[in-house]
Image 1 (cartoon, helix red, strand yellow):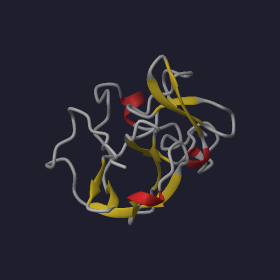
Image 2 (cartoon, helix red, strand yellow; image 1 turned 45 degrees about the horizontal axis):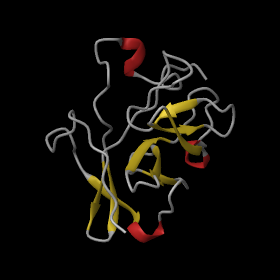
Image 3 (cartoon, helix red, strand yellow; image 1 turned 60 degrees about the horizontal axis):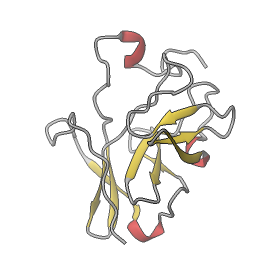
Image 4 (cartoon, one colour; image 1 turned 90 degrees about the vertical axis):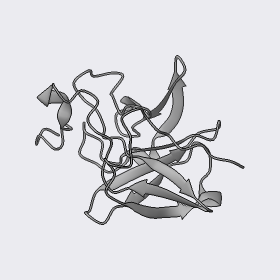
Length: 146
């Protein structure tokens, strides 16, 4: 099985400060999330989809403050790979982290790659999708709004 890493045009090696081993590649099952604890305490939800793309987003549900996104339901909405939170079923894009239900809410996305047999996650998230909008530069949980 080959797994494709999720990258965006914003990703570059200059914006990534480090990588950690998340798990062996063969341990990921399509559609089943895995929670990964980063050295700074952030929890990241790691997914592989049936078409073998890897995605990593915040594990913290911004609507409830619960670290449950890794237990979410993976699917797609009009071709966009998504995860639905298991708590209130809010749907987020796995590509951008944007909530597809609430425009002002999003998850951080994290660079992910395969190194040999291991899946790695960057220790810093992708740059904010809309850095000019302060409301979208942080999650609701980071703003103190559960």
